[in-house]
Image 1 (tube, rainbow, N blue to C red):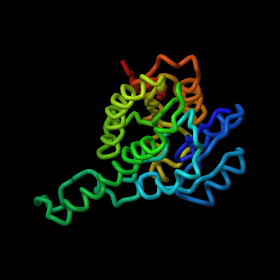
Image 2: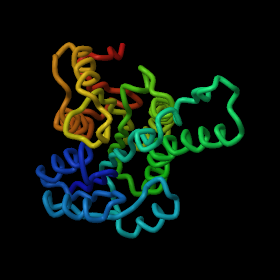
Image 3: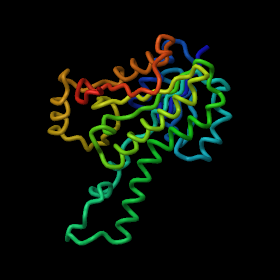
Amino acid sequence: MTHVVVSGGGTGIGLAVAERFASSGAQVTILGRREAVLQRAAERIGAEPVVCDVADPAAVAAALPHLPETVDVLVNNAGGNTGFDEPQGTDGGSDPADGASPHGKELAELAASWRRNIEANLISAVLLTTAVRPRLASGGRVVTLGSIAARTGAASYGAAKAAIEAWTVDLAAELGPGGITANVVSPGLISGTEFFRGHLSDEREARLVAATATGRPGTTDDVAALIAFLASPEAGHITGQVLHVNGGAYLGR
């Protein structure tokens, strides 16, 4: 039996990934902060739900007894752009409207905004991976969700996703002797997720689609299919890589 752990598995890409593994007969555990959302997803796909904020060290430690003793595939999917939940301008370091230099309060708010994105996207992956690392099976797989924003820019969100790429280089080297691979899957615009939280205008969506070579947004199944391949025996010599799923909007070469 293959044991798969997916963080942020209640919706969007995480749910699609969890459902793909569950449909193939794997035992899947999904983690997330929202109990009701997580429970509905688990019942729908036949997974085990574990309520946990993976950016919180204490919560990750408390969740460990509920995770599989052996983990064959770990998918670090939890995250997202926390800047969408904040007042416009908070996450960009923009100057005050009067053009004056920022004051201490504004700098403190900016620092807090950046920390939220780094914790939600980078620290969450580092904590969960570190916690389950002793349980990773020989030949296991770690896949972490990055973003096209790591290459195209998006303030603290893009910086956090770029840091995931750097961390994965070290992780791949550390895990490699055990036959365990570590890779980043980096999506562009993906439909069927909560990512934009209502902040994606029709005009911006049209621009993002126009930037692709395929003329369409990606789907959660597009991303899940790549992750499933990376988890397969055929992908055993692919590690430390960033694999892009963006229809050609960014060329990873």
